[in-house]
Length: 118
Image (cartoon, rainbow, N blue to C red; front, top):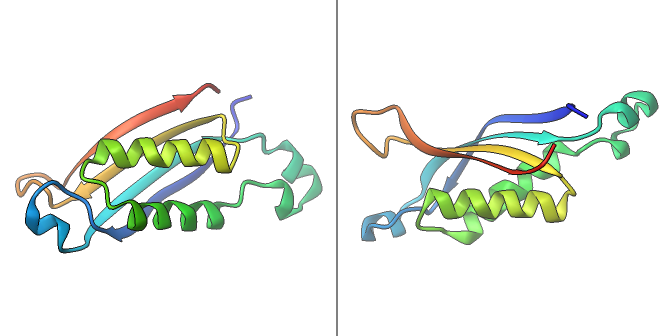
């Protein structure tokens, strides 16, 4: 199966970083997700209950980032991938997590990971 569900450019304001000042202010994070999901059932039934609920996924990812307050993007990415696999039964996820403005000369810095198997 090569079907996917996408969420691109999910903006989350969260505390993240290793410096003292970063632990006191929210910073914008951008999340891109590609998740393996068999879209044949929801296509046939036209029932949202058969689909991967991207609104709920977005809400859960945002909540995780706000609650976890990780220091590293790497930690945040692993946490998001783990929750998607355990809570939403996503077998494979490709995730990009960006932190705009972290390096003045760059638009953003970030990490990209893939977990699970298609």
